[in-house]
Length: 152
Image (tube, rainbow, N blue to C red; front, side, top):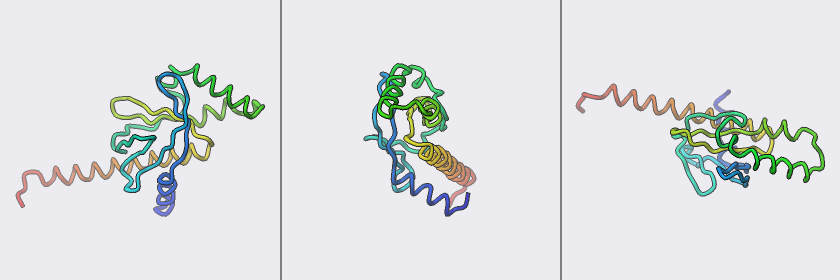
């Protein structure tokens, strides 16, 4: 990916998107998520989390949160089907647009993107930003440790 493509991708993440959030109690709600202007925080709802606090981005419905909330998810899918009066590809699309943001300590933010494009944008973008954030941290830590014991 070229530097210009990366800038465009991060720019889209800063604009934000709306997701379905899967709650611990089994309900599903709307959640607005974006990256802060300085590029260091993930802003979701009224919360902000350092990107450095994200351990991984996990595809699909592969967390305890999704597993605990199958009843709420089934109700959500039934609502989608009723709204669109078609089974078309809803269950498959639903699974393939789900992902989780896993934080250090293993808590998760379980999400469903509105479209496959939003899913790709956010999973690719967050992985890119987490990777570059970790690279910056490793570089800073390395520079700091190489100066340890040196008096200026």
